[in-house]
Length: 377
Image (tube, rainbow, N blue to C red):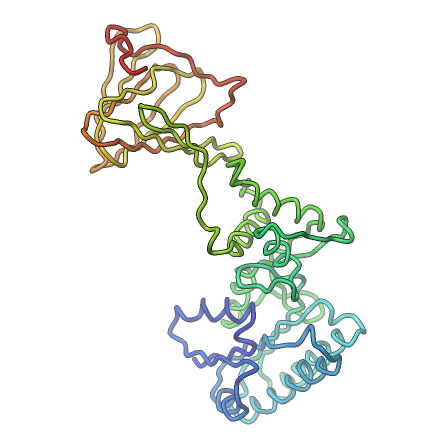
């Protein structure tokens, strides 16, 4: 099919086009710089139209009429002289209001409904609440984008009413819904409008607090609890606004003659990830846990992990090699150590079921093989 996207350089247009490029359909991408002759050619060849273009922050209020209503009518006339394709329009909940913007969007909706009635072709009208996600524009029409952009750069954020509730839809959910409409299976709502689901609700204060927590996570190491769907989507959006020069950061590293230990990530309910570096011949560990359990993966070098059940004498050895990584479980109730048997640094990724708590570490010193004297300790 030939798919026409108006507003192709906008937030929704970019995300939709990026998804559709993976398919076999031909894309016609139109935006403000598209010539009238090119638009006419695209419109006459189109088999489906995603009408995402619109004006929402003009310098002159008259642009609401020309950019929203008049352009829509002109586009529909071109479509009607061609294949009379189905049309999907991304509108706004403000179309229910009698301000200049709302009226211009509502009149565009009415024109599309009339087109559908004249041609007998399906039309899909969406009144979207606040949309957010990657490639949205800060300081334009997305408060979430502005919050993410400013907080990622440690710029001030101002909210006049922290208790104001925002209703939100995420860009991936928007695109998925638009694709359902493309195949004739939209999510129907009330009064003839289609809907994007799920919709999320949160206060401005809650949203800003969450995003500020995302920013501070590089210091606290604590990742947000992404079991909450809105938190997961907001975190992905925040990450997309990181400045390129700020992609990399250095977590805290504890180093001594034996090597180093770096905590990478802390999680809510799922423990922490760390990386351990050991010099040749060094043994680390020599302790056990009541409840905490761990998983070790040697990704460079070679060594041995030894275990002994507390109160017993038998020692179990598991040899590990970064050339053939294996996940080794460290059960509670076993004192354990890890020794570098190679002549280069050994690197081990370590997951622990709990975030280390210095006030209650659940870590108790006990040599695995007492006759060794503990060697490196």
